[in-house]
Length: 312
Length: 244
Ligand SMILES: Nc1ncnc2c1ncn2[C@@H]1O[C@H](COP(=O)(O)OP(=O)(O)OP(=O)(O)O)[C@@H](O)[C@H]1O
Ligand SMILES: [Mg+2]
Image (cartoon, rainbow over all chains, first blue to last red):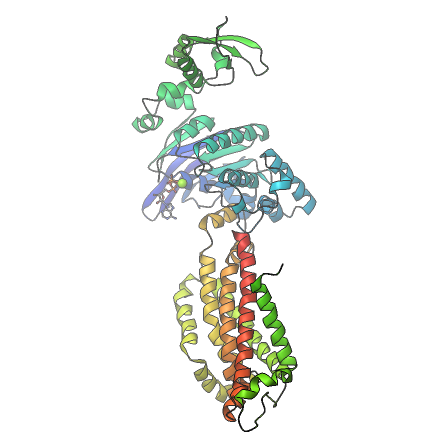
């Protein structure tokens, strides 16, 4: 668990992070959103002390980060940045091995760990271990960047716009992969983005920053239904709000008994996508299957809209 | 299959080695340049030992320039040394503006004749390209890469040795190459203050009005310079290719 207490950062007279307090739960994904220059990166970088706070403190599992030598602290915290910052003079394997090497792991253990991570990120070790970063696609580089950050099994992963440089299709895949890997490893993730879609998709909790202040901190549903101030309301997009709300719920949660004709929907897709499919095929209801192919019932436009209206 | 360019270099190297070990084989080629039955081939010492001495002088001076310039370049790009950057730049620039002959003239009264004043002149002259390239190489390292290195918990020393220097290496090597080529040519003037080297052949030619000697000295230095240039260039390319 990370506890941020009254954290501030000042450069000369300008305050870039103003008295922020928040708590991030073990094993959760916290997304920090906000406009450019709001202080998101600064807040993130104060957690691993790449930026020294002007006042306040950060506790990780109850321990003040100031009590640990900064290099040691960073060995324990994964760090991923936009454009990934891979070492151009090191192979994929060499890049991933960076922190284990700094920690003095023996070669055999490092080799095993590298293979394991490459497989986890669907990169064939035989093909990719010996490649240099410039020989990879943007999406592959990004995966290697995350693999590198996870190499020494950090309990905490900090990501500063990790998918910012990817095209929409690859980005969406990268987000899915991150979610899957995070759920599997139980890593606590703090991720900075200015993409609201990304925040809704990934964040267990979302922190909204504006002009150095933390203006709201809550779940996606809380932000949508009770935006703390005008800024948050504009950020979540007034017009899109009902749809955003829909995309937070899965079809399996609104299945009605009964059957319907037409191409069945998968129970794991969200309501926004289900609604779009129904409009597209011109039906009021569609059957729902679970992942094993068993019939669960049906979902109707009326049911979905009813869900979109009610405040969760 | 050997590419023509590679073949040309191998041929040049073979020719050079043959010439400095058995120059008399080539006497026929230099005969037309002699007058009054003067010797066609340098006869006041072995070309081989002069070439070796010449290369030793260059190697010694360039090694010293490299060590000093790279260390200085590292120092002035660290946060603690940043304020010395302008000062050290001007000092090194002055080293470059002094003509080597002037340095020799100043150095001889201080350290006497022989190898020493030549080494000093070449050393000073070689500093600038290496220093400038070290600075530009180190400052060209992408900030993102440095940020990542820091974020992963590398100490300043680890960042320098594992990230900055390897990435700056091609540029630093280009500086060393430039220095080495300049030194190779400039070292010939060392013979005016009694340093052993290929300059002796040229000076002997000038003194006895023997064009054949001048040509021999000049050609050996020129071929050495080309080969050295190509060799170091290939090394830079190999390293740079890895960086993409
Ligand atoms: N080293 C520094 N010195 C002075 N000002 C700084 C420094 N670093 C950041 N700032 C300022 O602090 C403010 C917040 O910067 P920060 O990088 O945290 O913003 P951000 O929310 O991450 O923005 P972006 O979305 O553009 O990355 C900006 O106005 C920036 O100019
Ligand atoms: Mg930022």
